[in-house]
Image (cartoon, rainbow, N blue to C red):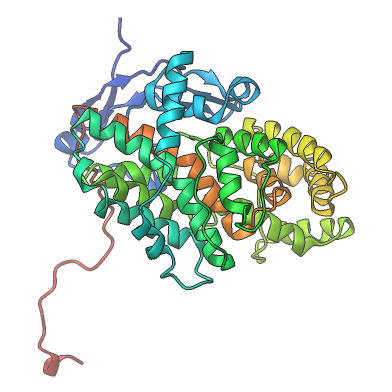
Length: 432
């Protein structure tokens, strides 16, 4: 038996509207307000869509109060401990964990799609040497539509599969090309004998004049970060991909829009901002002074890497990444890294401060991810690009789900208009 509808009563007219209750498998119920404008002549007002379910999805579930993150029902902690990024990618895209043969076929397909057209390399070389890598990645991804136009029928299951494998495979190659361009070094081609993360490290750090050996510790750490960043429900960049994709645009354009949205310092750029903050603090004895600035409403200082729009408890990814940071720095002989020690001390002091605890400002995934990228020698300007490589899997999964939904419609939010009412045009000579 379904749950009874809520009822909205207009106090002025007495008009009644039924608000059907829609229940998911887990999580809060949703009120279906689709008929409220027809019945009552009003819109709902929800700035930043904080309490609006913009779609129905089967991909990722978050319980912000309990600190739970599930990919297709699997706790992220279990996947981080036992899975691989390629396996998680298959899971998010296809809905189930792969069998051994399926996983091998998926990995092989991704590997064989990792090359990019030579014209794309020449396009990359056309950017200024100090252009931000995210601007380069966004532009190159959008331009892929000009190279793969023969397989962009969004209603063809085969074309959707080809696109999915291509974009996941080529993002590390595109990122590496941007990195090498900034350094003025020759581009390093992908290698089919390496796994996904090892191949990315090779393209980033190898040079033609000597043999490069991938550090398996570094590759494993990168694989873990990619798992943790693979998807996060209807965040700003994922919603951007869905919004752009709802127009029927080609999928490369939709992913490029997601890359651009991720670039913002309040989203994918937060891990870079954390390191900037730690360097600004400088020493442990400066932490109380910095936290006092954060509490000062007249100050523009922020405690970067703490708090989350959804999580009102510990970010489950932050717990995993904190432990990984300890292990990685120890294995790389960097356990005395001053920024890491400063981060630990900042976390300790902030979590004992009633101001931050009462506001449920706990460390999030960005607080430690930048430290790991830094330990892997990835330049700070590339941090958000790393995030984009991982999150592309989630974007693809959501785009596929949306395109396959028979109820899909072009997204069209409404507004609360507060501008001038209708007025008549006055000729320029008659204006005061």
